[in-house]
Length: 239
Image (cartoon, rainbow, N blue to C red; front, side, top):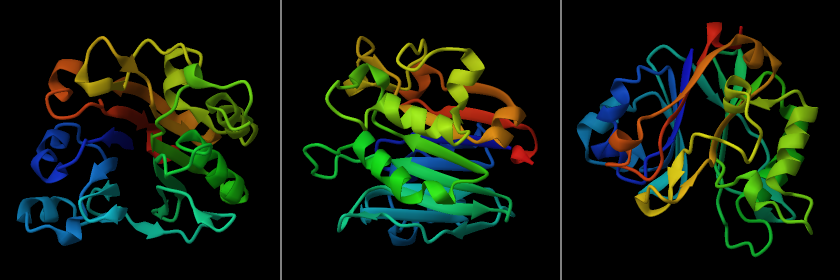
């Protein structure tokens, strides 16, 4: 099974054809429009097997699966102390494994933006995490850890490790968090401002079944987004 996460930087209706050559089974796409509220017929047809959430119809988080793959939305909590965290899209794939799509948001929070949103979501739902992939744009990296908080990127990675969930990129390339050699994001598409902020985390079943990890070609993908796709191949979908 091939799983891809990519922040399309908006207007996926004009960009989804670039994904066709990746031949993935599942795409987790951030900043995409709602396929059910667009007049673009080709995009609607391509995305007919999808789940989507968002604050408005033009920019949200979508999971798009190949025909024949069953996706069932899971009713996990996203409310922490009366405030909704965003954006997280949990689903069950083929009655076999859980997939949580992520687009970590600042969410107007002075203290719990981005990685703080993920920390809260995991705190709410860690009892649900079993055979799982957590993938998306985390908007976070260990290089931005702050000494005076307990929801740093490194803290979240440690919490996930305690649940047997690890980053596929870091396993495959044998690199430490914060020391990534391959960026997934270029601020303002500037080659001098590279960062690694997109991730695919998986439980032990996926760690054992990992075949390879790749990141899209910089020159090609920066023409249409400020992010590069992160591509993971698994043997048998973790089965």
